[in-house]
Length: 326
Image (cartoon, rainbow, N blue to C red; front, top):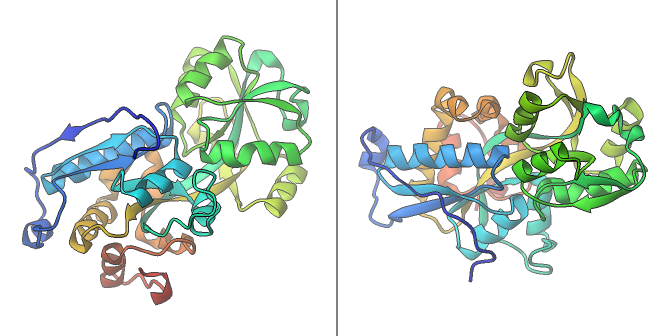
């Protein structure tokens, strides 16, 4: 049973650029089509995941596409149940899933989810209209209406707790990033708390249409957040948005692509190989893919790696602890 009704973006593409390795692989047990679970439209997952699915479908001569979902928490559940082949997740929800603490499946260990490759860090950032006068977290007024993204997303899972810990009193709102951006412009929201790879399409669009403030963590807020949550320190480069004049302090979580552990080894090997060996093409899909490189495989210590993915990293000199391979 599917967990929710989701529109499917199908990309039925020919394999005109089939790689030599894929031609030689035993494809007898490969699926004829696949889906990649992303998140809401207007977010980085949607752009990155749909573009990745396009590339893999094209190169392997399969039918594949990105699928709109509720984001990392739901992607973990959908991959585990077999509703989708691939997905995208952050390490916080992944740790919850393997510990049987997923909010979508409390008490159930999601053990049919394997890591494939590192994607990028997800910064937690806050945006308000410049006309609101809000320039810092401490200036967010009591009872502020804050959009936290889709229900169950990384932002919705962690950002409310972060802001509560920092003493912010708010009314919680959920929705897709594009939708929330429209609500901010229409005065229906005071703030949007984003957790998505940068540049976030919805923020870039807001900058074109309105003057905005991108609000950073001050040093005390940063230290408190690092102490209480599974995040790392991060700086949003000033070059990310036209609004920023200097790097902005933030926190982040790493993202990894995930696969059903029971997918054929050669299939996942080829998908991993194509991703890791074509970084320039990945960056043309989304700028955040600048960190979609093999060296960052070390940032997963939570999920077991799919044997197909682990084989590619091992063959190319990137050691993975055997205890982390399914």
